[in-house]
Amino acid sequence: MRRLLATLLLCLTVGAGATPLPATGTVEALFTPWDDAEGAIVRALGEAKKTIHVQAYLLTSRSIARALQDAQARGVAVEILADREMVNKGESSLIPRLAAEGIPVWLETRYAVAHNKVLLIDAATAHGFVITGSYNFTWSAQARNAENLLILRDNPALVRRYLDNWQRHRDEAEKMSRAN
Image 1 (cartoon, helix red, strand yellow):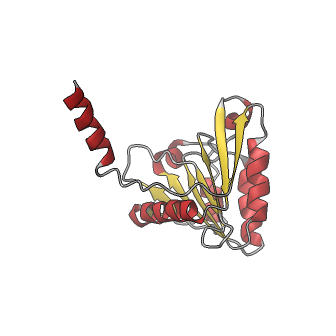
Image 2 (cartoon, rainbow, N blue to C red):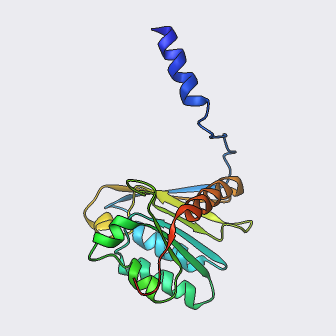
């Protein structure tokens, strides 16, 4: 039994690739439906000065879509990675509209489900931050579901790790045309 546990532990640690990162900065934890996670996301998008990188399984929230459009209008570079199947079969997905309005979108096709829910705000700057959790960018995530959202600020190593992962996914994804 011990040998099995030791082998399992070794398998989990070797090749996991996760290097512990320093615990720095601040953490804001929100839980729906009690906390206003959507409002926190919209406010955070309003803080963006240079870049916003999005990884979305589903994006149907008009408020979040509008905040992304507003950011782009004020000169922030916005880029989106989305799950292809959810965009193709999701009648209420706002991803095609955002692409049609000039926000670059890539569709993830390699995975059965591209289930990441991540926002990176000003990731290449000293005060970039990560927003992540179970929270899909939808009305239901705010009003009907039990979800969590973390806003992780002032941890450059963590932001860099998320940005590197975002870029790796984008490199494997297919660019969505404005006409899709």
